[in-house]
Length: 493
Image 1 (cartoon, one colour):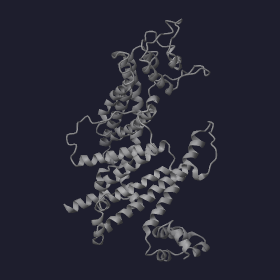
Image 2 (cartoon, rainbow, N blue to C red):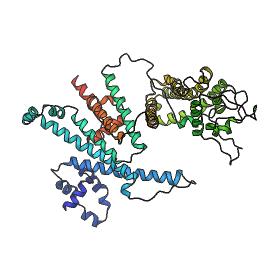
Image 3 (cartoon, rainbow, N blue to C red):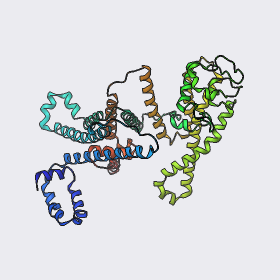
Image 4 (cartoon, one colour):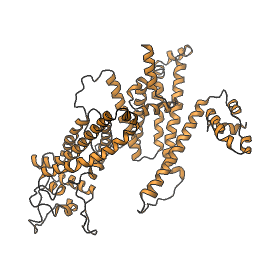
């Protein structure tokens, strides 16, 4: 076999895959193609006694690159041609394909896989060689280096240096999101390890986190976010959702000025402070008995804050019940065998989950909004004017008590969103500076922690997909190492 062809095939397809390809596809090909293609036995002999680990790593990285590039290209087509149908398409200056964000992201992902496998094998072999008798002189001359390289976690930590390949991808929100996600997941699994070791035996029952739903909140609070009326003239401006939120923030910075009703005082020289004039379309028709400017903005046609709060629940509970019935019902489809075996029990659990999530989300959103009126009524205008938002989020997050046993994924999602938001606010206000490639360093440190936890206690990594993904990164295949650990423990017992 021609050496160039042999190596090209070797780095593209394995011997087992070639045998399958030859059996199902090449046999159906024309005679000319069959005669040119080498037989599986000949191909096996050509690559026999070859170290296939590096070739397998290159094959996997190439496939990941092609899959990522194809997926990103497909997503671009969907977003530009389908989701933006009828809207003007933004034109960007043409540049080299090698400088495109999609290409750099695909290269970054494939390099992480390739370097992680190569480095893991390198440090594993190095550790084994340094533990032999022949390496005793080296260990005596370099005790600290030898201790580090022969440690149990050396391969896991060394292979995590592959995370620096994330720096090849564009420095945008995606990198920050990935770094925060991996950091929180690694912290979660490290917490599981400490918990298994008995560090948190006396953990308090109220251990949960407050939740923030961002745009989800703004889209599902019609009682507090005033939409443009159907008959409102199109040529007149109306505050957007973000404009309303910005107006609330500015009102708090102004120490909550009183509301001056233009209906009662049409000749007043100043109805609104100049910095919040953009909310005048909402507040100009507010009920005259409303005293607080925030109330005039949030519920202009209802003077009672309590009635607005209760009305929110009457509308939100049925809406969220339908939403979570659909979502949780779809998530339950993989467990259809359990439904067929015991439908009453499974339907009861599904109904309880829907009810808990509905009350949890409705309560968290409604209480977060209602706390604005509550603090306005209870506290002086100048007392913690801007810090009230944090306490309002805290009160809304207390509804997480209902999901304290099964709501861990929701709490972790809100934690990641909060970390991202806190970091951006801190950079904007000068609390800290954004270091160059700081997200890459966070990603590498998180990957080290995740690899270390997986090495010490695979069962602490509670996600089977994450465990199998780490197996792929190490070149072990799509296997769940936790199952092998369980089997070994059973045999020892």
